[in-house]
Length: 427
Ligand code: EPZ
Image (cartoon, rainbow, N blue to C red; front, side, top):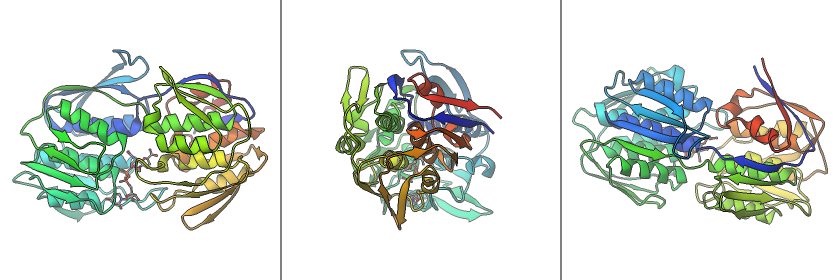
């Protein structure tokens, strides 16, 4: 298994190109199941999760053609997906357990075929992560869903019908699943307390290009008019706001100065406010986002994760890594997932001073971190260890790098091009 070795103490300087968003790309790829027409997606990142989604879609009968990016998207992949015929309505355990976003096929398969059998994903390193909201929403649209042998078995022999559904809790994935199901349902679907994440707006934009009227993206209420057939479309994936925030924190950690090409301040406003309070300068430029911290120490700030537009849970671990070196204390509260502090024991092994009280972690800044052998537990936890390593004394070796490869495209290349001392150790 690959490892990554980082020697801390180098400032990051230069520029980093931000990739297309992983969490936008995955539902967009699934949208191809809604139609027998082609869906072309530009600016898709090259990541392990994208490969897993391609495998899942291929076994459902989708042909997938991947080409190097064009039309100004020279750094991503252009995927052309076409689900001429659905070969299988089953999403098997072997794929779903690897990647939870696989459950997104439930709504589209059910809407198109009247039948879907999707494995329950099971446990996860960051919390229980149930799928009850996906199920309840589809039931409101007329689906019958049973659990059998670890699978959700969903039927809608007469097709799905538009409905009004209020989410009892904000869920990105359930909102996406229901939006896609509603595209082929009879009549209008209104989703209240819907997720407002930029990835939802990106999916809405793509569905509109495919001929589905969707209104209200970015607000709490989404209205989707079902259509009898969707049309061929082309869509360009938004830039990855979590990758943007992650590199912004890495730059802040090393007191560096970087332009994040393609990064968008408006997609991470809450994180930007938090970073500014901590003493980091961020400004939108013509090509992206400039981040620098050239004078003064980092200040401890309190953070609470919340659904968008709040501070993203997917940046919580990275922010904590940054706060380990701040002056003063920082209270970091995780409200989205119940056990997303798996990075804490590993950060502590590098000398961080963090105490967990239920859903909050009290981080007391320390003058120095020391390199160590550390273990990645999930995607964002692993990158938080890389951020800590960039400012640690000596070498850090990060094990289980496959977590990083799920969501960060060429991390070591991007960082070493900006002066980091980082290398991948094969095998
Ligand atoms: C998406 O996961 C992202 N994944 C996650 O990113 C992200 O952390 C999360 O949204 C929150 O922003 C993708 O987009 C592929 P949720 P998702 O449904 O859709 C509870 C990363 O690191 N819930 O919004 O699975 C759930 O347990 C990943 O890139 C239910 O209770 O998240 C959680 O507490 C990790 N019942 C909360 O809602 C349900 O049926 C929010 O989860 C569904 C969710």
